[in-house]
Image 1: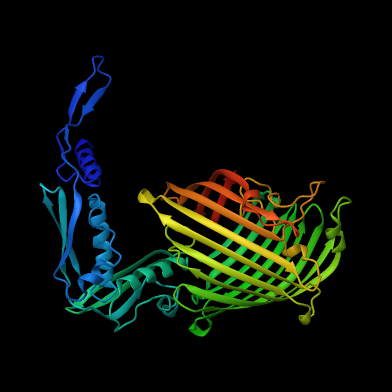
Image 2: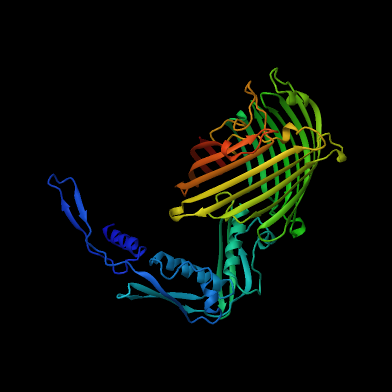
Length: 508
């Protein structure tokens, strides 16, 4: 590794402007007891250089001003060789987005020893405008061609777009139908390529049975049957059952992500849950019918018609008055709507991109239910990629719910802040209002911030860890939302994309 270390040391200096760095062959000295070596690298640093002229040669498709838009190299800053590699990628993608898939960008660095500056000239060989002749899909023994083609963002006879090909890869990967996905352009004529889409299918039907523990459900037994690609058409069917000390649930879901290959999706959910909130017991049965729609590449919306019946019983003797008032049978009929923009590269384990969502729910007596309320929740999360597969993310959430016409907020619609999905390090609901008896009250408003620094533990096993810091709280009905009153938590989380789906364990 000694020769490699010489190059690594040079790289450190070259990213700090030392263009004339010289690292000689190391000397090794054996200690007197012959147990250790001292390794010494002779270094001549020279002087740091700054960026001088930045130029482009050979460009005809783009004007020089267009090539400079979005450039990360700035004249006058310290020279960094890593920025040149980033610039080559940016220019290649810029040309690729216009159909010049085989553009070659070669940088040359011309140092000025007297001024201690370095001119960077990018020599561009644009090549020909390339079109896609045919798209060939292989490896899909089960999945139908149209299921794959509707995720592709390039089409036959189109000008090739390398950015769109990259997005096509992300969308196929996010289907979670395939172990591997490859999209390879193969030149068949001077100005034409065929796209070879190669996939390796994996089982999309799962039966899992197991047990677990969480602070909300305590010990649970779970059985789940899911088929994510029914008959190779991309339809999803799920039947799930859970039996726990505090919560029992049953769920049936049917989903078609592209009704008749359109941009509209359809989903039906039928469910029943029985939950012991300690303060009271909730028995909920319901169904929802949801229509979703893609508005653009990253933006989608949904509209769901919901009907559910609720039975609240067994209040504790020290339960708060507003809990006691809602004991008995209720029903909720109304709408749940959402609009979201999701540009994450791989939603199960993102490295870049963001997701922003706004949900507006309405329960109304005009459709026959007894509950009358509105609920608004906003949720934003952003990921940044770092070297060595490190990344970090920041998430912010705000929510508010109010009764309409003097009606109370239904207990099932209140926010319970605390637990692995909101404030790690707090027991479920205990980062919000709690009665003097210790009973959970739920919140009318929530404000939560989460920061995660994520690092790989085993890339092969798809195992990651995260150091997190959470800052948030739930607020009572008549309580003002004050940032200075937020609670704090920090800790460590493990994340594993297991064969049975994503699993998380956190200590805060």
